[in-house]
Length: 264
Image 1 (cartoon, rainbow, N blue to C red):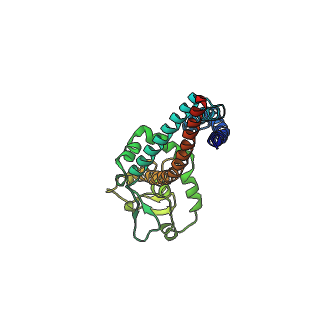
Image 2 (spheres, rainbow, N blue to C red):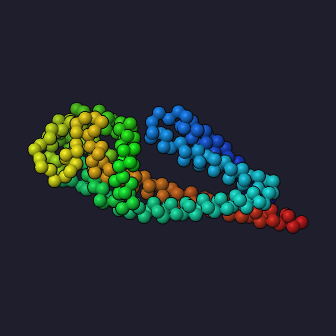
Image 3 (cartoon, one colour):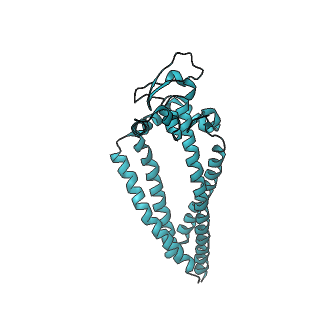
């Protein structure tokens, strides 16, 4: 019974070590073979995560199975820091996603989005030209609007207006409803005479690489996607935190066992 916590901790960290190998390999592969800036953006975080998991799991495995108290102490410190960061991230994620929702339009199957409806922190991220240029290049590369154009290529104007578009399609791939442009196809609209109350109407262009990627509506559509994704991640993170706390508790028992054994 005394060794149960040590054995359990050793098994958990063995599987964590096995998990760290493909994560680290994926990060290294992305760094060498990424074709775009969007993919290269992910390589460093993945490498850091892989290295962190590898070293922490080794410390826990050796500390628990070989009774090395100093390594187990380092393992517990790392786990405590990870739990603390997890709590902070969860609170932060819920705080920055507590605002924002699409505007329901009369006789339309889709919603429209406005940057001002979201938290100030999220607004600052997309209002930075440097950040947005990078995000825009990723959106264009991911063919968000190309797929959208193909899917709705042959629908009538009434069918299009009643389509259930996602936030990115509504914000980036079509002009704002306030512009009152004449529909030709999903990504092809004839501009009506201005002036326009909504600045996005001046930004819109039928060119596939332009469309409404620089519109405030596109930025808002991205924020709505982020808001929904972060909420889901925060909810999953709560379960992950419970698991980490259980592992941390097992680690504390193993550390206590090591201390007791050293007294004899």
